[in-house]
Length: 329
Ligand SMILES: Cc1ncc(COP(=O)(O)O)c(C=O)c1O
Image 1: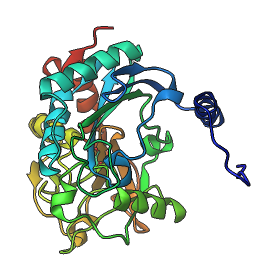
Image 2: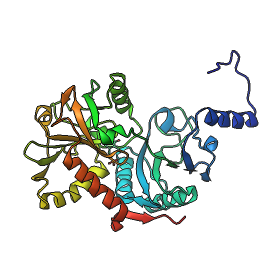
Image 3: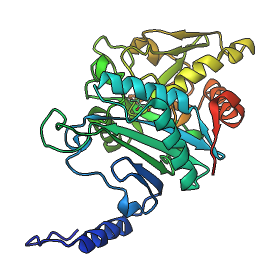
Image 4: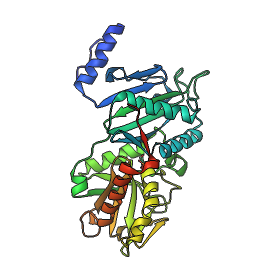
């Protein structure tokens, strides 16, 4: 990193060259970006920019959500968009047009990207125009859509399972935990803390000692007597993947693999005696946790119910017709 001794005034051409050089130093897998502020879609990552005075940037007054692209189709977008609209309401953010208009822009940006597998992340912001706390007078909401490769996790997580720790950072109060705002500081600190300790991720406990969630994933358990147990959604994010799996899991009860399904408070002492513990989310899908705070979970190997849940999810992503949108490439 070169730090200029005396900053100089830049021309527009120099700025563009600087943005390009930034991306060359640090290659990214971003395929297309829609910006309501630019009025369209760009595919050059150097041009995927937001004004620094957008309130989402300097005050965190913005929300986001993510949906997956699987084999040229978008998976479960409507569930993610419903959560996006709920997050906007709780954050006192005006929508960019209607839900349907945003949905249409998401689908058309995906088509322009040409990407057939990856992720779509979209943000709503209160817009630029001041460095105040309240949005600037006349600020228009910003809507941004990024089509990218998706988050990459180590292969080991699916073959051997993950090791996690209880984070030392406090869980967000319920209102902020159920809102998918761009304030992810506790989540970021939790993940960094775990990595610095040589582990894979962290887990939040709530003030009563009940299990919350992980950095960008929900946490679920299989009890010693075979019950699939998930924390209540009143103090954690309503994970679209968890909700979908809870709806699909009765098939495992029918097959006799799972003894029952419960969404309830899970005291951490009870959780530690689980036969299986797993992370669930759009990016990780389903992955077993094999060690928590240095103690083995179950037999210390990825569990059978986590595998069965992953198979249900994979099947839904391939053929769940009511959950898939064909992208008009
Ligand atoms: C804090 C948090 N919890 C849980 C999840 C899992 O949600 P989903 O299944 O919708 O990806 C996410 C990811 O969006 C998250 O950020």
